[in-house]
Length: 368
Image (cartoon, rainbow, N blue to C red; front, side, top):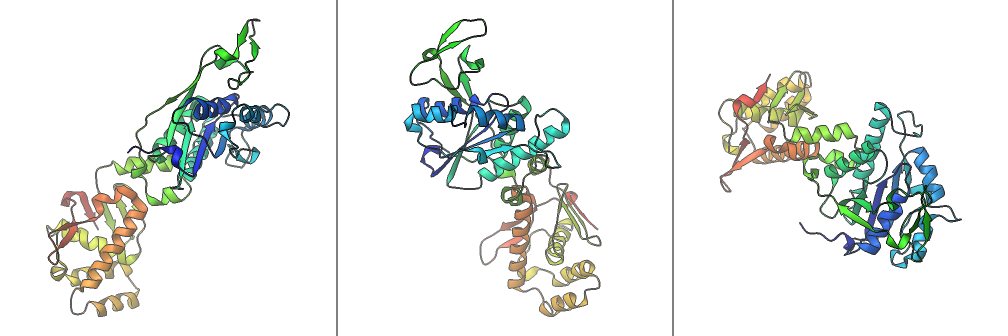
């Protein structure tokens, strides 16, 4: 799908940085002044450590010589994207402490969760396009950011790495090619002309896995391990396990939380599929079998059981059949996302003779 990110109302630039805050200005310069078509952000965010925040605050945002302000002054086509200290997100430990660096396994886990949560949040607005730069920070930070992008990116989102010709790429005083060329001096006292610097972006193609995420992770807080596990489970062989006494349902190894009525309804369909009667028209549905299963689930809740028995005393009702099908499918989709597909009710035939049922093989079903 070919989508032009520049057409979106909100255009977000997100970068991870460590001890090289110039990654931000180099990327912004390339996006607005080099790339065609250009991508001019309306807002900018940094994700970094406490040490990276301090460097970015001084090198980029200081009123006396901050390079972000210098870039905007030299290249008015960039406009005035929103970027201040409030948009610098610092990675924190589990106890809330700002991390000065990312070294230990626990610190890497905290970085992974912070990056994943931020990318998930920034991809919720359909009227926003996200451009992510993985050029800065420690290698693990770039990896986690690229992986999070792969998990959550939409068609309008882009991932890149900024490229700067040597020896400018490692020069501490180079942040972008200034409109008026400057002379820079290297550590070995050689002189450089900033006009000779070339800054380009390498766009990185990725496999987009957003379709494999359940709705809960798209709308709520996203941890790295939980998100990866959800995608992995979407590719797992289908396996439906139902324990009526414990009220437990597992789809492909993932627990699904169902209230008694949808749980009983799914178990009823599983019972039909396991016995070779997978596809049923509502007129052929056995209400007694469903009520027997429902009784095992609700146990001592006599009122709920009596209410169901009264409604189905003359057999299966069309409205009851269709409403329970819709409620079950809606709940499975909310909790499993596309991984729910093998456990949804298939259709066979055309109205008014449509039949429904689980397409799972009997050997993929365990009902107890």
